[in-house]
Image 1: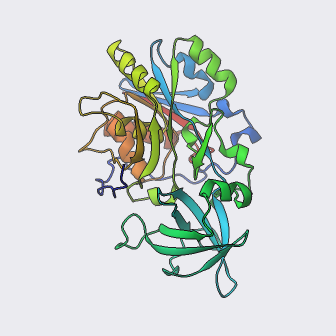
Image 2: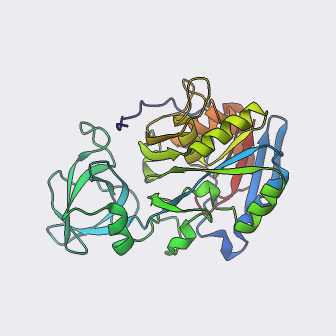
Length: 352
């Protein structure tokens, strides 16, 4: 499957201002368990506040919960320029031809470095060189991301396992171990950043969930860097929907149950594997789909999600699943109740 640049989406209707102190600066385990974060439940009949550990009682027997089993890579590395300056790099993904997609970052971590030049030779640890080629996904349009060749060639996952560290933005206090950036069901390394909507699940929580008659099924979508998600459409991401999961989706819908995706990554994978009538089939390749008013969700009936930045493209996907009114109500309630944003923050369950 080829990599195609997504069409620019409409702006999300959801509007809010991130309140002061609204960012989570460290994993919640410093004060509560993973599943002890707050959970805002938004339904057509209103908004309610719970803890994430309450989720088995908030879903129905026969519902299908779809989780993303992609594991997080230590995708931040340092490159050195010809003049000796250090250039931090975030490795977003590896393309089919072996090229890497990278985001050069400022040394202070507060945004992309726009001074990179095509053809510039950057030295990496381990005796390798990285040469940026051009902007990604459209070489004619300058942006945050670049394609680059590495010499001698090496798989990105292999190199990062030896030399990388977890991506961490300036909002976090200190560095955190890679284990802090993993979900408990992560099995296949490939994400530049954690598919964080599933982080509050714990192994003990999955047992009562399944005992309540809720089925859990996997997909894989390797998430790229999140920084391009601000005001910009998401980039193509590698995904796979197994045949068993596709069959479970069909059986759940036929029986009248709900398909509840854990995270926007799971939504994107399922919807990328769906026919126009909502039938999901086994699929693998690159997800370039952008959900929105012109392409609403056909498969997903509910969504477990973290809280996203104002005007992030993720909000458009949330609206495609839950409707703009429900998402707007949920975010207004989250602001008032002082929920915490970002990968270590609180959660929402949208069940329109």
